[in-house]
Length: 254
Image (cartoon, rainbow, N blue to C red; front, side, top):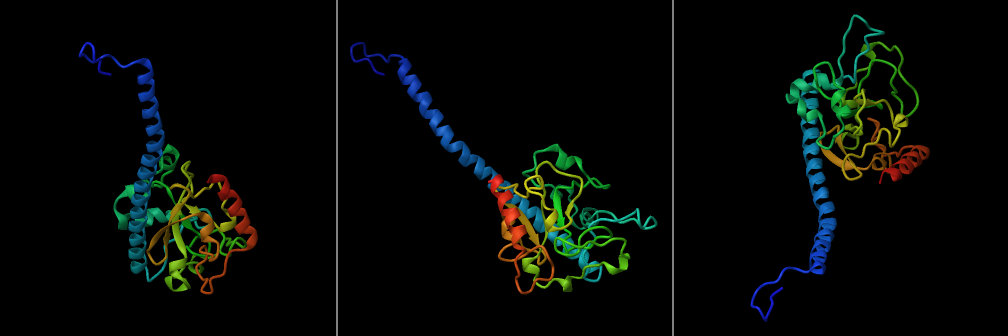
């Protein structure tokens, strides 16, 4: 403050300093969450761009292989003479950059540690629930039956089999703690929050069969429209029991 008698500035009192510190602390408490949210929104946008590029790679692959989707992964146990890599290994040459297969919000080294044979991180999930091709032991019926030792020739999924491409997701995000499989076998196997799909402010980015990308919460993918199956032209929702399971577990993560 200014001293009228001496004409000189005096030092701040302790109370004034404490008031200033308190104001700074209050402003920081208000602004830091805003900055954190803005930073996460930027990461979500970057992740959306990643998935968009992955989607373009998938479309290029299908054009090269007679409108057929790429396999999820190969089975060298039942078919030892044939080697089939993970889907990310087949798509990566079309996408070029390996960085596009890692969500910017992933901070755990586990998600980057689990890599395919050509060094591509397994940071994104593919949808194996009657959407993508697999070669053994993964569900082809919604939350129920599975394929076991089926001939590979029986299993290619054609783009024409998608009843509503704009309502069928093909790739989404994995939880931050990673994992060693870049796919979800079927909806009933989704175990939230251990398999949580909420990397961005309570939501996750989803790439759809028509190439568009959208941020959604997991529950929005099962009701009012089941987006996990490739032939759902009438817009049927997932069974009520699975909706309740995902709703309850999603609530724990918000």
